Image (cartoon, rainbow, N blue to C red; front, side):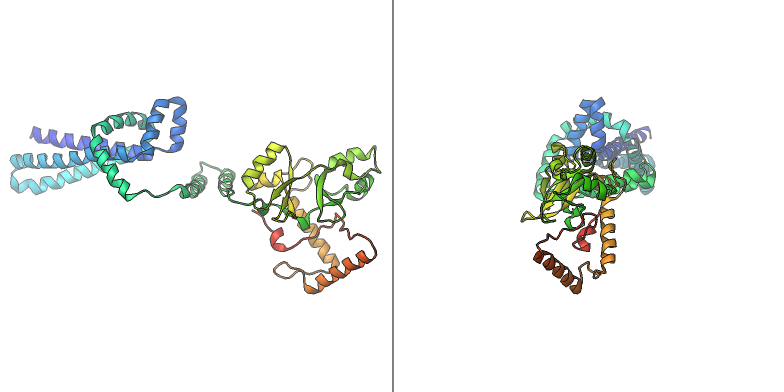
Length: 392
């Protein structure tokens, strides 16, 4: 009887440990390993190696676990037949199955999943010796799995991290703003800079020959800090001026044009991605850039604030900007002007045919009078609704 108890105890104990090891190994996360490297580099290195090639420790664990189950059940069954007789062998098998289920599967795996952080380091050390003992079996297993191939799961990492951010918010570990920022930052990798730009046709822009005094008189109330300037044609953006610089210079040179304060614009293709442009603007120490199409024509502008907003999902306000959303303000000014002019947009955002003809006639009349058709900078137009409504 004592021999039977010892055999069953050893078999269940070995299986118990194997189940704990398996649960701990599969519960360890890359972030935990990175954090452990700061306090216990050796353990972190072992765990990282085992997670990178998780097949090896799993083969060792499952091999030992299978031996414990199979040999333990066979020897215990033979011993039980001697102690209780063949007629009680079925009852013994049922009791042994129950013990194995609870004490070598359910309980140890629950413990391993709940306390894996405190068990990870010692378990990784034990697994090293287990791998050495079962090295031939590990080699055989690796040859088989090579034939099966491995799936590429890298594409799912972003989706999983985004889901984890939402789970963290629901569980209370992350607040709503933290979850939104994490989700937003994971979604902008492939986003083109054109998706967050202010379109050319709703930009607030000024003619470069405008005097500093005229700016203060006519446009001082405009809530834009960095203002694009054009030469002759409103579409010919050649740089930008800083509102504060104009105000300071106007005290001494009110008759000078704002062009003397012009700064060059960083030019960016519309297909460029947000993250590389963010890095470039930081390196160049510039807060505004011009977006151009494949032919070099200006499509719009983007500011450093626009990029930060796209990364964080928040509205960033320049300390000199009294209005929170500058893109929304530009579109509002455009909409007001359209109503005053009696111009109506179709549902798809295009000008009606009649309005287009009126605009063309006005342009031709201005050209016949040798007067440049200059759109007042205080009244920006929009090219189409689709492009101006590009927002995150």
